[in-house]
Length: 129
Image (tube, rainbow, N blue to C red):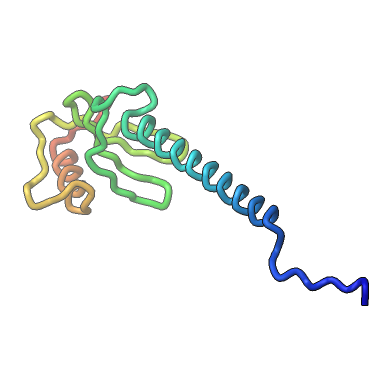
């Protein structure tokens, strides 16, 4: 029995070291990816593509169909009601700056747009007219 060798009880240390090194590199790459995505979101989504914060604010959005919505915007103090589809954006109404939603309604709720749209139609304000 001269050629008998005992079975290896554990993997050689080089294998564990390589596995640990690979796992550490994966963690570093994932951390860099998460950091880059966080910075992109912080710089481009909140401040806009041009880096100017606060010029255009979305006050409320209401979907009227699967890919169609009505959006209330505040652009430098002027309120604009626009309709957006996948292919076009249409100005529906310019609302006066003093136009405010009733206190109990929250922007984004169904009653908010319903009331503003109803008041706009009653006044007869239509863009381009």
